[in-house]
Amino acid sequence: MLPILLPLFIGALLITYILGKPYWRTFQRNKIRQRPFKKQWRKILSKRVPYFRKMPADLQLQLKQHIQVFVEEKNFIGCNGLKINDEVKITIAAQACLLLLNRKTDIYPKLQTILVYPRAFIRQQQQINNDGLQFTQRQALAGESWEFGKIVLSWEDTLQGAEITDDGHNVVIHEFSHQLDQEDGNANGAPILGRNQNYETWSAVFLEHYELLMRQVKEGKPSLFDYYGATNPAEFFAVASEVFFEQSSELFAQYPKLYLQLKDYYRVDPICW
Image 1 (tube, rainbow, N blue to C red):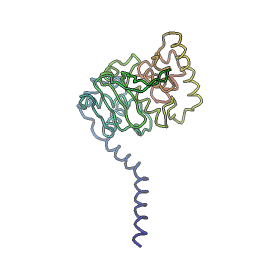
Image 2: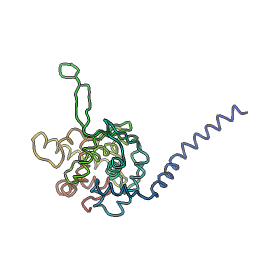
Image 3: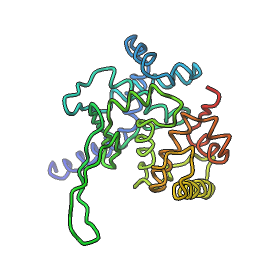
Image 4: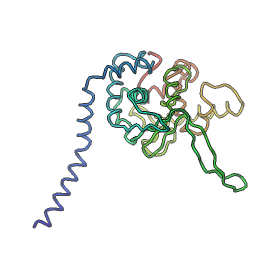
């Protein structure tokens, strides 16, 4: 009898664990959110994240609660001699959680680790030229989002992106928007939309503006968007997200349809901050 009951008992425990895990995680996160926000963390927000000072009080509270969960759950690793401390964690977490306000969120469920370099890091990649010869391409990057649970950031660029809030460039917003885009698979410029949005409208609006940017790049015309956004639809979504949070008035004035899509997606209206 025991050899028969033991597998059934183990199976029942496994099913209970699988079904109960989301509820346990929600319970744990609620406990974390109820903790007092550390005084030292508030000082870091005030010093390093000007976004926070401009936001309404209700959004400030939401952001602080998201930060508490983010810092508790994500693993930060310093690279090339960079030491991880609260300033690094809170500065990155605050900008990352800015993208999660006013909606149900699983706090970047695929993301496990944030690697932080002191400054721009070098990525080596094997390439093949037109003659079929293989060569190594070295590229300096400020950030990179990987599909399998990692983000890489330059601390120097993270600080600069946080400090200057109106230039349309923010490496943390850029890379974490990729994480949102990757939640349903490969990054393609179409993240998981809310119930009040539809993919047909989203695709039409984004394609229109993506193609416009490609023409501006080809003709050498100025654009509100960084030319890097013309690389592919995923990069355009990331670049547009940077502009949405940092140059919201300009984005609405020049490209109102795109602004409204991003406003509905992120569920905030930075023009009012």
